[in-house]
Image (cartoon, rainbow, N blue to C red; front, side, top):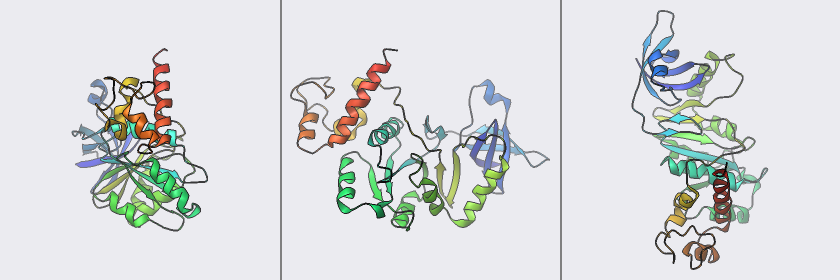
Length: 289
C-alpha cells in the first residue's frame, strides 16, 4: 500500500493512506543503510494481520530539510506576530537562510495585524523587500487574510514554522478543513503516550495540500556555510554580485561596496543588513571552536 508519513515518535510512524492512518514500523534494512524515515516521506508499506504495517520502501525525495527535519516540502511559511511579541528579525533571517540553502521558497506571515497600525505594517513589509519572499499580514483571531493564505497552500506541502506565542496553532486550525482535522487528531491519538515531546506532524489541509505543523522555536542556527559565502543567501545582496570594487567582497569593511551603498540609499533594508553582519560574525566565531 502507498501512503505518506504524518508523524514519527520513538521508532513508530503514522502513515496516511487512502484507508486512513496506519501505525507502522520500518524494515530493519533502513537502519542498516542508515536511512531514517522522515515526516513527509512517501512510502510503500505492507499491512499486517493486527492492522499495523511495515514500511517497505521510502520513495525518492524531492527535498530534505534539516530543521525542521522533514522530506518533500515544496515551500515554507514562517509565522511571526507583528506585535505582542515583536518579531525577532534576526531569527527570521536565520530561518530564511536555511530555506535558501535547501532551495525551498518561503512565505512570511505576520499574525495579529489587527493590533498594528499602517505605519508598523509598512515598516515591517519594507524590511523584506528584495528578499524574494512574499509577505502577508493576517489576524487569526478575526479571520483576516486567511483565505489568501489558503490559496497559497493549494497543491503545496508547506512547512509551517515560527516561535511559540505568535498564534501559529490558531492559524493551523483555521487552515484545515474540519473533516481533515479529525484525521490529524486520530493520528495524534495513535501515538499518544509514546513520548511527551511535541513532534512535527504532517496535516492534510485539502485534497492535494499539506502542512507540516512544527514545534515553536526560540533559536535557529546557520551551519554548513562559510561566512564569506553568506551574502549569497540574501537575494538582495546576491543581486549586487560583481558590482563591488573588490572581487571577494563580503560587504562589511571593504570600500566601494555596492551592498553598503544600497543600504545607505534604502534599497536594501538596514535591519536585514545588520542581521547579516551579526550572523557573519557568529559563523566566523563558531569556526574557531
